[in-house]
Length: 114
Image 1: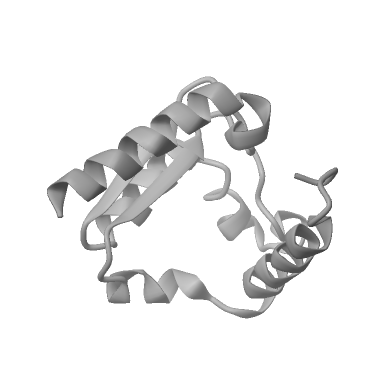
Image 2: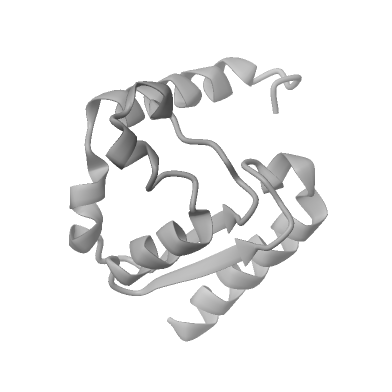
């Protein structure tokens, strides 16, 4: 996605994402989501933006993606959690075939329910 002609769009969306992570506590918005939502996580992910500056009591709660994913999914109405048990932070890049199969399967199932 970084080698395509539209890489500037990818870069802009990435910048917006990191701005949201740094400036907007979206965790409090989860109960407001009404549309079907799919959360996809890699169970081996150890990414925790800001963990190096977080207080130790907060830092200790980070990086537990199987637990955090379940908690996040439970807070969103109509949420589905898809876990990749042996994958890390970017399964869409690391294992695109597995990711696309899960993504397309979820997407097709959501449309068949409507």
